Length: 102
Image 1 (cartoon, one colour):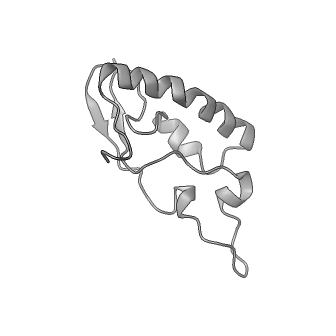
Image 2 (cartoon, one colour):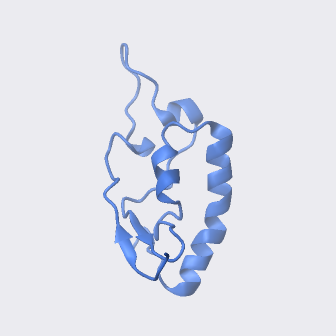
Image 3 (cartoon, one colour):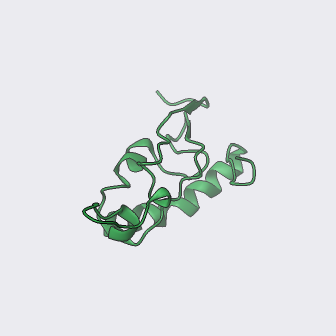
């Protein structure tokens, strides 16, 4: 059952988020930014709205956050396309956290 509670989930891990990706060197595997060309929308807040299940900072669901690193580019584009509307709804309810507030 969904409610208005915010949940903090510790999924923040530098190896998880593509903006922390390091350049290739030697036999390193390609990072997801290098693979997909897309940077994660994460701002390292990782609190999820109990009503919608969306992160109050980036707008993704927990499963979307978890799949971001390995998802194919079309999936990342679909997730990214949904984020502005989700963030606007969180804003309207007064629960959104911006990068400046993080």
